[in-house]
Length: 270
Image 1: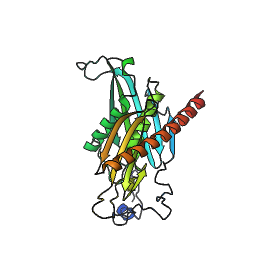
Image 2 (image 1 turned 90 degrees about the vertical axis):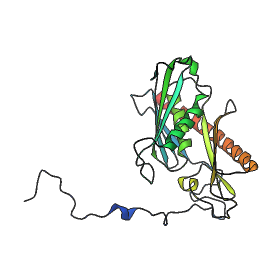
Image 3 (image 1 turned 135 degrees about the vertical axis):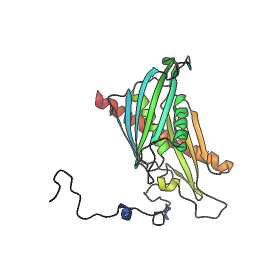
């Protein structure tokens, strides 16, 4: 006699591992004869941006952002009292916590922050701190929480953009709207705003080129000031300057797009 109080499972089941792509079957990024990437973009093109403000009514400011296939949610709390009262500072303090949600990447992430996520948290705080008027909330702390819902590539840049928009949403006074952009060297080409496949792909050229190198730039366009610059991999001096200039041009385009999206949010509210 069947147990009616229990949820009956399906009669047939399949192993979920059968539906997963193995590393051998995964697609490697390429450039076609026209110089276009797998998603149809030119090497210097940026993926579409979308953002929605005010999703969390319990937070001071919140933004959901999509950058291509990358989806990020950021909430800002404060300014409020610092956790450590002995570390009183005449100016305010900006703290950030970055986290990949367990289901956001191909390999499942843990619930605790790993070393990469702690490093990303520091980079985001450094990228935003110069733009915020910290003297407007002395001896107080502004907490920024960034969660990556889906990692489609360039997650750190998307997190900086989302946090920047969230600061704007909560009405914090800023000198400028901070933006960021990154490039990767794929073979002999520089690709702006890389996908996750382009970020972790190894070059198929000779060993002198080596694995993919990357540059990330956080920038204040109005002040013409760089707040953060990171590099991964080996690059020649000429390549570094070329990568920085590509990132700067990308930041200018992203800054204009971010302003347009934020203005649309303001008009929708009013």
